[in-house]
Image 1 (cartoon, rainbow, N blue to C red):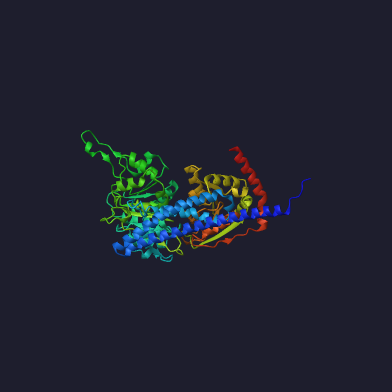
Image 2 (image 1 turned 45 degrees about the vertical axis):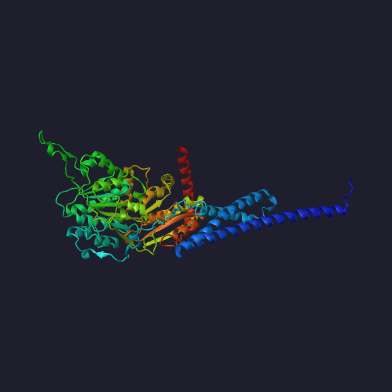
Length: 595
């Protein structure tokens, strides 16, 4: 058994440990003090440089030179302190006993070093290096800062619309119109009923506010004086479904005044569209009369097209020409400007003989040549994108909506349902049963999710009988059939992807259900805008997982309404839907396994 150590030895060991601890603490304090001194030197360096800049601005050249000399000296001192800082950081990282003592000071060093390197380009040894200052970009074009604000109640009775052709007025009345909506009345005034091309028109207004008729009426009115049928108006939209919808608006009005409209959106063959829109090619009637050969006058006055099919005709259809164009409409402008679409915009502007793209949005030219309408529910404010349109003295029409860029219709009522992810199918089934026969669109986040939800609802007999699917997984024929069934009342539930959110006008929609919560305010606005159109009442329900609630509330702060009521489903309704939910999930599981 070992003898116990003598008391004196124990005291000496404790003293040695205490001395080592004190020494480590002392080293840590010294290093911390050293870093503080470095920061102090850096601040003095910054002060000297700032003094030089101020002197160069406000004092004489001699005073500025003196300050700059002082700053150069300080810059040399800063280089030395940077080296010392790096040395101290290395020592601190290697010395484990002082890591805790110097943690806060070490955390400041990366930002300090970065700022010093930034400033170094203006210090000693860098006098000749040009300093490039980042020019602040114009966030909003000047004309977008001063919009033509449109109050919701500024509609005009049809009888009070100056210059409106009586045939158009009678047709509108026959279709149930009694007045022009505010955005329509404003566009009519600015363009003098389509007869003035002094200002291009940009329209940013919530869905359902009447943007299509806002440009259709002035264009049709402006074309009434034409003598020879030629293609004088081009309307471009991003999808064939939207193009078909706008085509129906023009087709409903043009026959009343003797104008013709055609559609080029891949819903017919290229040859059939070419014959309808551009009239084909006139051959020489006999040898020796070749001079008579060439393109015939187009039998249509207005062409509604998608970019892809439009470019196919301009590049491959004999006689396809935009040389007589007077009106160009870019509808759903955000989507069209976001994608290249075979460079359709430069080609169209060049072919139409409109303003050169080099002039852009700030053109001071003599005139636009072609009157342009740009429309979107959420019009981009990116100057680079807007400039590509080559607008001439544009006027920006914007409906007032609580000073929010993203706005939903005032007649819309908004609700949210909060549940777990596992209970979403149950809550959706119960909600759709509660809505009964009300025409309803239910949105998902993707085309795959649309198909899965449609399969799920197909497993609920009372919902399957009235549900149709609308997404890009369906053919154009299937989508058209789905819209016909929904509009006619044969189906009251449309399961859709976000392809349905932009521009589609289904006037009978009473409710919208967001089965998948929207990520962006713009998506929420476009989905909700499928109902409560043109002042009619409507409701939107968003099904949320508990973890999505916080993000959804933040999203609401970016739209006009910042509060959404909770919608509580009756317990008995949920319990009644539970067996159907279980059965539907089994069918969905079988479908997924079979894929």
